[in-house]
Amino acid sequence: MIVGAEVTSGQYAVWVGVLDLDDDDSVAGVSGPLLPVHQQARVLVRMHHAPIGYIQIPALPAHSLASRARVAAEASLSDALHRHTQWDQSVSGPGRAGEWAESVACPLRFPDSGGEGVTIVVCSRDRSEDLRACLSAMRQIRYEPLEILVVDNAPADESTQRVVRSLAGTDPRIRYTCEPRPGLSVARNHGLAGARYDIVAFTDDDTLSDPGWPRALVAGFAADPEVICVTGLVASSSLATSSERYFDARYASESPFEPHRYDMNDRVTRLYPYAAGIFGMGANFAVRRTAIAKLGGFDPALGAGSPGRGGEDLDMFLRVILAGWRICYVPAALIWHRHRTDASALSEQLYSYGHGLGAYMAKYLRSRDLQTALLSSGVRHAFAFMTQMRHASRAGQLGRRGSKLAFDEVRGVVTGAVRYWASRSRRRRSWPDAP
Image 1: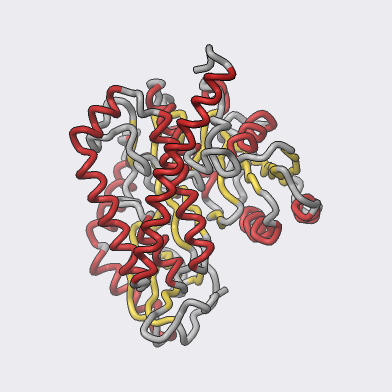
Image 2: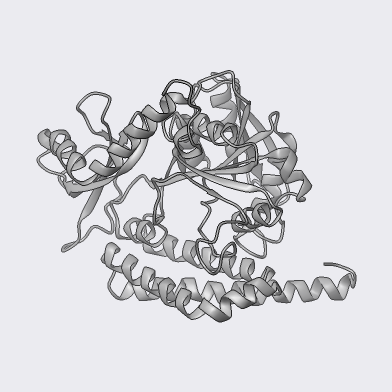
């Protein structure tokens, strides 16, 4: 649904939809119907249910939206559509197994059942209505074998438990468990320990999963035995408010529609593998439980609800790479994310994101590789960081409020780093032999 409190004079709301080129001629809305307030439409174009790219066109008139979207897709995404067709034909060629990217590009090749089992872990804390929408979307998943494990993290009441039990009554794949200790890393470790299957997928309670999400994750693991972690596309489900558009522009991936594999041989930036956001997002990733157990699970000092307030996903991705394993990004593993709709909630979220990034960077600041990378290219990366913030402010039409949000995030980075080092010093005083 549209929350229009921030859509004021001189601003515009963007409607979000999906066009599947292989299906009927309609454009399906992601978070609500097309309304007169919408001036623009962002449409995710898919072929064989594989995300190909975005187009943005005028939203009205509604009756011609689908036809105009098809014309725009054929014009602006022609190269990507042609490449997908080539990949699909290459994989299906006689006697040819196909290259890695080709094998994970087309969902038509992903099995609905018979592959490895998947446990989806959703960690939630006192957001029962968000959780209800999240689980309702997951009920549309038809992959087998599958379980959906909800970790109720340090709940203040029984509202989460009631939601889970009401939905589990008609979907036995849904299970409830409670982790009384607060912290997202603690909750995720609880989910790992209770998972029935070795592939464990994580998402947040403010997301909506595509029905083909687990199939694409499994395909990522099946295509490469060295892969320990698979990440996927996180798309914005609504861009109606300034805050939503700011967040979308601030954290948008540079190349979200190309499959990619990462390991220690990859050098995409000088800060690799320490640079944040390269591998994926914490709202959409899966791991092999047995391998992650060898790493000791998620770091309880990081993540929402911990002193670090975030960064546990960045830390896990980095540890997988440093351990000599591989991460692969599969765009067809699609999750829709519901952003904060008002400025105060966005400000708190950005501060927490910055705080987690600062704590994460502080954890690895003693690494000589990171120190060298920061000395050689730290200024350039800081400039790019600020440039992206300015771009996000323009996208959200926030004016001076954009500068305030940027300051909140930077303040979070500094505070997160300082507090992480302070907590580390306290641990060392209490336990001299602590790492």
